[in-house]
Amino acid sequence: MSTPRQRLYLLLLAIGIIVPYRHAIGWLGEHGLDLPRFVDDMLANDIAAFFAWDVVIAVVVLLAAAVTDRALHVRDRVWVVIGSLAGAWDCRKNGVTPDQGDTPDEYCDPGIRSDGPGGGR
Image 1: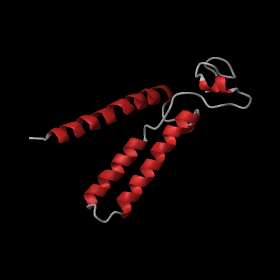
Image 2 (image 1 turned 120 degrees about the vertical axis):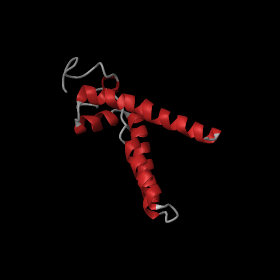
Image 3 (image 1 turned 60 degrees about the horizontal axis):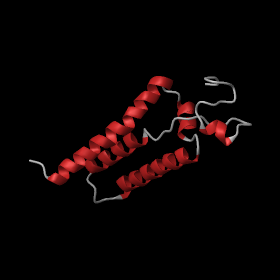
Image 4 (image 1 turned 180 degrees about the horizontal axis):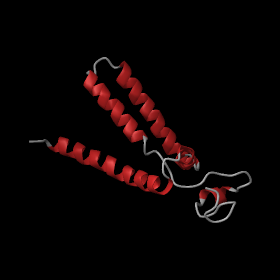
């Protein structure tokens, strides 16, 4: 039988997988494996870049811990690496990036683009 703490961690794990990946699946369904577009969308504005860099730095720290922490068993290190990389996959934000000449209002609103509605990508 599991403890209340274990059930809480399992619930948080499920939420941490389901919520981000529902967005990733939607983005992949719309854009496919377009890596340049992924990076553009991930860094679309200051708040998106804040969250993206927060995740990237956290992953680097976790990977460094997995490599250098001799107290972790090899199996635990593998799970830290898998969890870090899987969590980093969904650091994205829908939106458009500023094109040359765009104003902040134009590139913060995904419905407004300098080349007209729906154009450009």
